[in-house]
Image 1: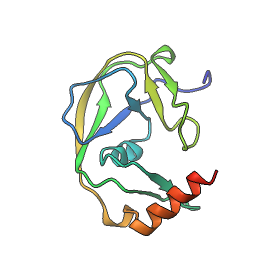
Image 2: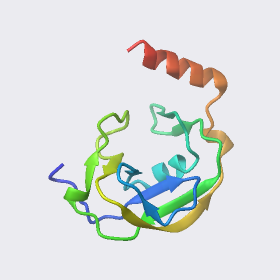
Image 3: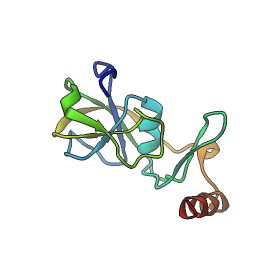
Image 4: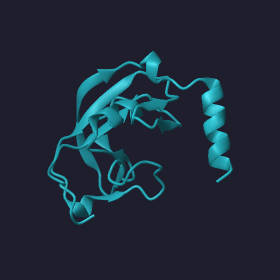
Amino acid sequence: MKEWDYSKAWFHGSPLFLNELLVGSTITQDRELARIFSHKPSIVAFDENGARFHNGKLCGYIYIIDEEIISEDVYPHPETTMKPGEEWLIKRRLKVRKIDETKTRAEEQLSEEEELELLEKLNNR
């Protein structure tokens, strides 16, 4: 993505305490999305108003990438279901610094029925 602003802050969310990300890790410039990823969801869904819902149950951490990112360091996630530019994979190890701790929010949690419905829709594609 040649027109992308790689100089903006990049984030990672995880339930693990980290100092460094491994090659293939996911990063984003959307801090709220990193917060959701910190709960380790297997499903992240969006409604028509852009609200996000997920099935993650873990508390976690938000990290900021603690070094400069250039276009050669990242590439768009090839199998994302999100909008272009929201989810990226890294090509090299990157240092991170914890900037926040997270707790799940009840209003974002998918019910079991909603999870099953979403999985059924994905399987019928």
